Length: 454
Image (cartoon, rainbow, N blue to C red):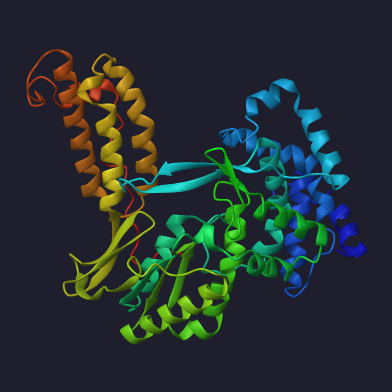
């Protein structure tokens, strides 16, 4: 970054919000970086590394890491242990190591976590140490505004003020405008196959700071500890680190750019990190979109999953597709017969994941627990699930979930008291479930408009 930019950052430290209050220095830094990147799309930034080891940036990064908690890395140090020993000393040491270029990331601790709704399948999760998570978060705070300024409207995942629901609304708008053919894409092991050289090349388009690029490359080459054996990482980004979603978006921005040019005539791209669909007016264009996506992803070292990627026809509700936990399908309007509009509701997999959690909490082998404790365990799960799926056409699914929860609690309570059957008609009826304080999903949904607002 030039001296002019550095002085503009210092001036921005006193800039005010819309409500008149001054921005804090970290937000002022981010706003200035974003503004400079937005005004000069071809500009490269030369002095970003120095902002990573600023104490105010590290303190903000620590607050994010502390809020997210997370498991310890290979050193076994937890967030609570750092807080107990003194956060200021911890951050001062990190800043000094970054300033003197003696910071070296530790290897990642690899754990396998089961994929929800997919028995027998596991997702590898790489856990950095608390110190590495703080530095990664600080670097993300500095890099994100630079790249956020260039990201396109097609990208929704892990971006400020954008969400999965926004992506679903974009799908609804495109489908209701006559794009009946959907190319559903599934990238095989996206986070584990991104080519390091290709990723760094994308970073270098906006970042000319060699120290910053070297720092990011050191995270890509950290190595993984699993079963007592350390193995190198030849490709991919550490899934589970704070900076991985940003790096994935930077890499897949090439795909978004392809749809700004050659792919524009093929259909509308809606991407949520590594999960994306293309809605096209004809099958031929959907097939061409699949070919273009495969070619662009190949440049990054990634491939489409041949069995999980395909083309779906939405005409007159004949077929539907899964995207971001929802099942999307066209349904005939009850008001205007013969017209079909795209609806969405929780997918079978999403329902199965929730039912499994309810079933585990109400197993007959756990009847020693008080019913109130079971309800206290279930309510946050139900509330969070309803909070995500309430914006759609989920009313029937919500009623089905309420009935299932009622049934499982009735069976659990009957077993607890030595009764056979459910007894939910006479003894454990609606009044009983209401007095327990169980969170009810019915009535919590909000129907999406036909042409969702962007």
